[in-house]
Image 1 (cartoon, helix red, strand yellow):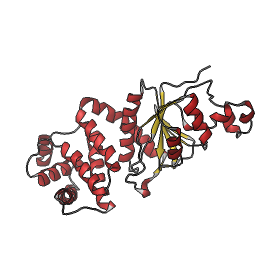
Image 2 (cartoon, one colour):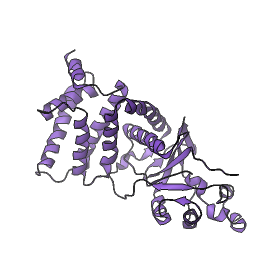
Image 3 (tube, one colour):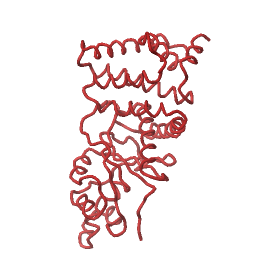
Image 4 (cartoon, one colour):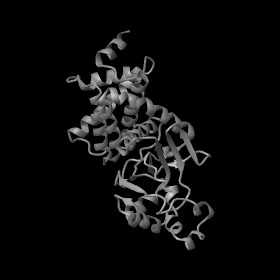
Length: 307
């Protein structure tokens, strides 16, 4: 009997580590699970020869050495929709303070499912597996498919923010469900999301900061003059109702000064804390947009300022 799971997609996560007790945390159609088993090179070679890989098994082997967690999405109609849902969840994790991370590939089956598959395909080798691996999919009962996503080894990592706990994951999942509805109504938010997700993969950090600023500026398309003043003002109103507006305004102005120095060539490198400040500004803006149920227009922000 086939155990193919065409409505399930799985995303191995580089660098992040679990900070929850159970093997898996579930929030409706999203789940995050611990990696339970090592996957042998022979397992991956079996996937290459007997299954449906669109990625080299040697590359999978290299990436899996740095995978401790896997995110899964169920009840989705196709791979493209699964990726859209995953990106919304990823954004939610970033809003929750989780470090940027990479996803080397997407598959139809979990790492925990195809680990041990080479030995399970052989009656004699199956008995040599740990008990937890002796039962599971084989090449006769399922076809594992996998496709490349992010073939990179370098990105900006926030080492103090690598742990994912149950509370943060469930909050990220709730955010994702709300955010996906907003994107359907405003395609500009999809572009902003893409900028934020891609920024940590751009090195050095100074160039990544410029990319983040392209996202910030795209939130306020009517601003054509006095960029520093107007964007600082709009972000201060968007991010806070009253109490922290002056502080936020100053932070945005300082970040914009860095952006200008990098753009004009007077600054070529920045400290990670400076990058993180701009990263957090954009995340706070994303959080405010989700809370507001959409991106306010510039005129609406000015009206709020004058109330």
